Length: 181
Length: 197
Image: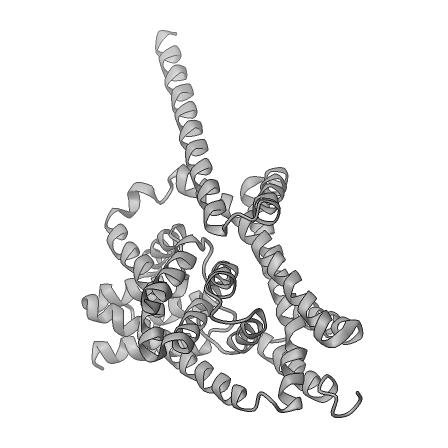
């Protein structure tokens, strides 16, 4: 039953994603690309690109779109509920007892211990994208886009949507084989 | 203005103006909730945020759900979350559907190729961010040890990330409980010694 799979995939990814939306990206990728094979790594990177260029929380954009691709409007709805409802309900219930464990040592250590895992997952995903880009476009284009986007994002603090728009334009002009092949 | 309409406008606006995923949206939600519509004061907002941060899952929707619930109950929560996520989701589905229908065009396939390295760079920056956060909370040495350990479990033993995270969470819980008991015991012993003296 595909809706149960959709629910389970996004429920799991968001339950384990300590550290907000970005932490769930590699976990979602693991479920939808590696495990259920709903989208290829390629499609996932396109999806991430466009999702990153648009405002709003990233986890719901990924969930909503993949849910829609796999199971239509109902699929999107199931993915969104799985993404949002468990933690939202937990916050509403737990805030009644907030004082009890807000400063709890256990919670502090648990949150921190997951951060290195998320860092590794994100790093590995980044390397996979570098590798597919190398295979598709060759070393020179890869180097140019990587260095430029790093400079603009990190040094000049350009808006991510502008950097993505720039890369789309560069790719369309120079990596399409239309101008130089 | 009707409260539901306020919730809808407040969360739609913060969702559409907030770039860079959930965490960057927080100041915008604070503006709507504290300054603009005065649903809560800034201390309450800080407390809600601190608690929401201890739970897994996207932060923006947790905040939207709680604040919506506080103002208008369960329906308020649903309105807040929907208003927050729907505009950008519909835009995403629209853009990608358009994109896919021109898949065979070389210009479009070039665009897709062009953007892949940018996403890699963004993910690397996020990875560094998490490593920095971890180093701050755990100390550089422990953060590195845990990162190497996580790498071995994930890439060499190829365990499911969920299992790796579960192992880390359980170990952290046990470690914190053990440490908490130890400091409590020390405090207790110190107190009793002071009493004797």
